[in-house]
Structures are given as C-alpha cells and as structure tokens.
Length: 405
Ligand code: GCO
Ligand code: MG
Image (cartoon, rainbow, N blue to C red; front, side, top):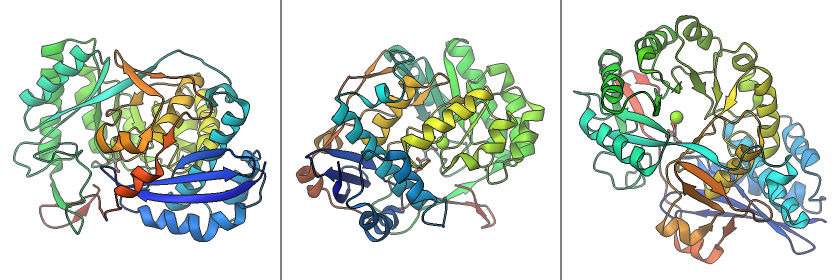
C-alpha cells in the first residue's frame, strides 16, 4: 500500500486549522491535524516543501519507520513546526491502518482500558460570582471536574476570560497584530486563593477543580500559590512555571502538595524527561498534534506510567477534531490516563467541515466505534472558510516588560 498523494488544507471554520490528507494507491485515505495556533502557514510550508515529496511512494503501513525518517532523517530535530507536521502524517497513517484493518485506532494500540473518558470543562467569569455561577451550571450538566479562571480585579484583561468576545478567547482574527495584555503577579497571587475558597464554600469538596497559571509565575511564586491553594484540594495546578528549565518544577514540588500539570507546548518526550523521571509533576499535558502524533504519545504515556505520572491531554479548541479524536483513542487505551480537557464538541461551521466520533455524556467523552480515527473532513465546506491571519496575545508588565502570555 503506497502513499499516492498528500494534500494540505488550511481553513477557518471559526478558527484556523491545518488538515493533512494522505491518500494511498489502493483507495484509502487518512486525516491528520497540523495546527499550530498563530503560526499555521509555517507548518504548511514545512509539509509542502519538505515532507510531502519525501513520502510519495512510501509504504503507508510503515508508521514507525516513517516517523523516525521524518524526525531523525531531517537532522534538525524537535520544535513545534516540525513536530506538528510529523504529527499530522503520523495521525493520518494510523487512520489509514485502522481503516484497512476495519478497526478503531484504539484497538491497534492495545484495546480499551475504560469505556468512557473523564473530562474537565472550563468555568470563567469577570467576577467570582459569575465564575461560580458558571461552575454551578457545569456541575448541573454532569461535569465531575472544572477549571476555574476569573478576571483579576483592577487588571484590564486576564488570560482565560471571554470578556465581550463571542468566540473563544484566543481567536484574535479581527485584529491585525497580537493584542497586548497586562500582568501583575501581586494582584494575581492575592486574589486566586479567594476564588477557590469561595468555590469550596459554595459547592463543597467533591467537584474536582483545576487552575491554569499559564506560565506567569517564577518557581518560588508558584510554590507559594500551591501552598495557599492546598486547603482547596485542586486536581492540579497547570503551567505554574515555564518548563524550558525543567528543574524549576523541583522547587515548586519541594514546597507544596498541590498536584502539578504541564506540557501543552511540549514537542517531544525530551521536554518532559526530567519532569517525569524525577516525579516533579503529576500530569503530563502533551497534545498529539504538538507532540509529534499518536506514535510518540503512546510511548510518552508508557514512560510516564513508570513514574506515577498520568496523562491529561491539552484540549483547547485550536486543536482540530482530528486531534481530539486521536486523544480519545489514546485516552481510552492507556492505563495511566488521568483526565481530558474539554471545551465543547464544536457546532456550526466546525461541524460542517469535520464529522467526528465523539459525544458527551455526564461529563465524559464517549468514543463511537468507527474504523481508523473515525473523523471525516468535508473539503468543499472547508474551502468556504478561508484562512485568516490571527495571533495569540502577548503580555506586558506595567512598566512595559514583556512577560509570558
Ligand atoms: C489550555 C491552554 C490554551 C492555550 C491555547 C493556545 O489550557 O487550554 O492554555 O488555552 O492558551 O491552546 O493556543
Ligand atoms: Mg493551559
């Protein structure tokens, strides 16, 4: 079974997605997600100019060898653009293998370890009251875990808050340049424990709670926040510190029993190696699209299992339904699955373009049995929604210093 064509689509059904379709000479096709939010066309160029031509004519069954060929064979390893391109090829090849076998991908990965996938939803708001009202609604809908983000009083805007935007908070396509947002660590650290205190007072201890710091703190500040949040028993504190220097997490870990999660921008297992083998974290959040595909995600989960680290894949809406489906197949099979971030199944334009096998029941994702990944992509519908240049925001301190967004 030979790779006969590789097509790359860029569309914007609500937000930009890069979709890869691999076709074979015996009539099969597979789909992959190559979206890097705000840098989409760089991945397209990598795929068009440097990947596609190397793969035409290759045996589509050779998933491991093709992965190594693209990773080791380029000499230039790692990086978000390269790894998203490799990821999309890898997902598409697993999709094809599943279709050829007539089996869902999770069967090829080892079968089911569970029958449903626990998720955490997002509650956010301009005030504590609004955030907690939203939390209450999610509890009523059946969610067992919820992430809380609330606007910081006296800061003009805060990460994770919708504000007056109708679309999800990171889609900035109406603006030509990255929007700038302010940051103030003191105001933030003084405020967040109150949000969680009130959440526990109102809803008790059973609902599992998450918070995303979005890499705004230094290790010792994160350690303090972790300690301050201990009475409110978080499921995990996400991205409390940037992780280029993995040792930063050692410092956070030494001071607090609040569980720690990190990894949504990681590209390979090497980004998490020290974090995992030193047991400085509890959840690894790598995504199939940004972490090089299904092949390395399975290896990473097995490596993490040895060190009591569970998986909690990134689930933002800038990952396409193909990536969400890939996560579902991994989540259903790996023994050390923890939880899946969940921000909706996508309606409207997204539904017109992508058909997927996921549904939500009582705060859990249910994965329908379909051959391959179970996703379909409507090329004609996708063409209606043209790519729009779009950027993530940047953050500055009061004196103008550039900070982590
Ligand atoms: C999350 C993430 C996202 C990212 C986004 C960037 O935990 O879901 O932090 O919200 O900011 O995916 O493109
Ligand atoms: Mg995050």
